[in-house]
Length: 272
Image (cartoon, rainbow, N blue to C red):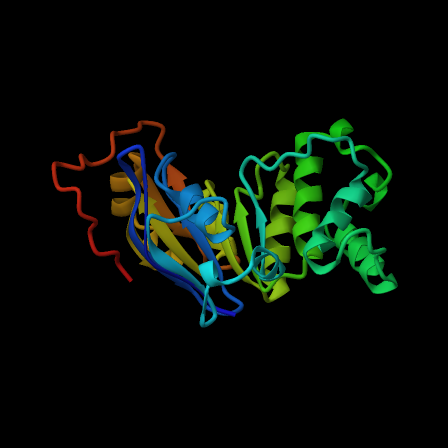
């Protein structure tokens, strides 16, 4: 199912955090949002999982406008991993994963055999089956992150929205998680800080800077030395991965400031 952001803007305390963001994530595609800290990536995602109401513009799930759906219905269709996702009560891992079924059940309804099997499969996929009886507060940050991703999978959404899902993960689990995302066939919008991982995992990249979408397209078209310098303030050499052909960035250790914004507050047209 397609996910469409149509001229999405967010204004808070007189500051415009997002400027007319338009982005389409086609059915079954994985699109990455990248950009410096404070560029509006998490703000955009919050509008999709309804933690934040946009000041203007719309979010559509397929042909339906998100704001017209009940909270239960939107939770059945969209699963999210928030950047600050926390579990404050010491539930066990299997209890937290099972919470992903909440939008689909009523009251204290017991999980069906199929739902229990779904939870077990998600824990296997995220390599946390051995932690099932552990309290989540005893886990490392990376282990807890994988628990929250498993919970999102158990939700059986049509759209996944993930804010820095590789946060706290070691290299092996980063690679395994992003490979898993590519194999699900779900429509996925993911925020990533590692541009090399984003290039390898995503079909398309949208680059945000100061709340504006400044580039949008295939990773090899978007991740140019000029754009990375202008947006992130670092000098890079872009090479092709010897096995996959994906663009990979080699960074200079001499950073330079991003290009000045000037006085014009309008967004440039993103490249395609």
